[in-house]
Length: 97
Image (cartoon, rainbow, N blue to C red; front, side):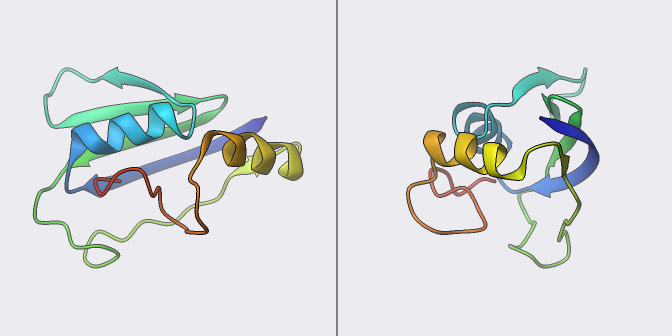
């Protein structure tokens, strides 16, 4: 289980990002009262994603963070079972993440 984290990131395609976080990574997606923002939640991890069509991949809106998990192998196996299907640090099912 993820024990704690918090991230804020800009994404070029908010709808595609939300779909990937839900379907592949197993997060719940919540609206935040502003059409340009979503909150993704899983266990104790919270990510606020903001729509930024001009965001360049790993450029001016680069994001990093830490996940503190109680079982790294179990977490890896869970995410691997859902996808992505090829080795990548980004979701391969959607360009908007």
